Image (cartoon, rainbow, N blue to C red):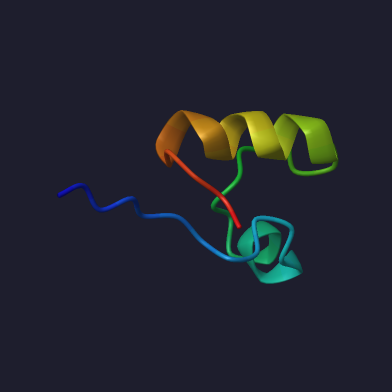
Length: 44
């Protein structure tokens, strides 16, 4: 059995405020999604 871990809200402004996204992608939705996809195998 496989378990995939992701978050339900990769667009949540709190992720940006918390500094999880690097500066070069924090203002770019596509860049944030690409960065997120490098770390998690799925997104809701």
